[in-house]
Length: 155
Image (cartoon, rainbow, N blue to C red; front, top):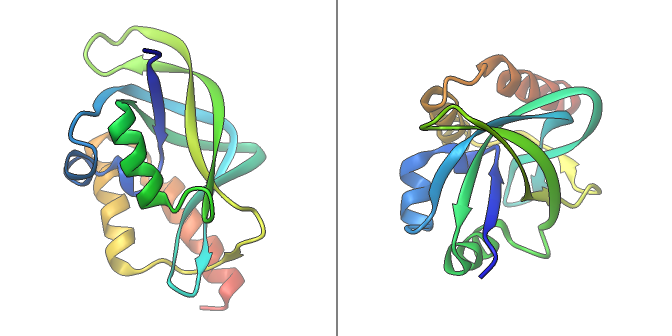
């Protein structure tokens, strides 16, 4: 069976949440997506993180090794294929235990681009910030995405 690797950049950086949703998933390591940016987009039910191409952008991510059951659970949670679609991205990650660097292809959920920018709930933002704290990611990246949506939405 071919291994499947998942790129998490939003609420799925939150380890307790992922452990509940995907009990068989394991953390491989961390990486940075260069040439991508974080955006909050969504629908009437709420706004959530997505990534879009951006020449100077960078997004910190966690790479998870997921089972087929975990991937099905993620598909349901992410509203695949209606809300998010999947895209394979080749990237280099740093192993969480070994510190060794490896290049792999992993899938990310990307929200359909026509979705509107919007402001996330406080709960969602807190969940994402907890993930950033766990992995010592630069919170300024997440907060800049929030500021951008607040400016667009006039808040």
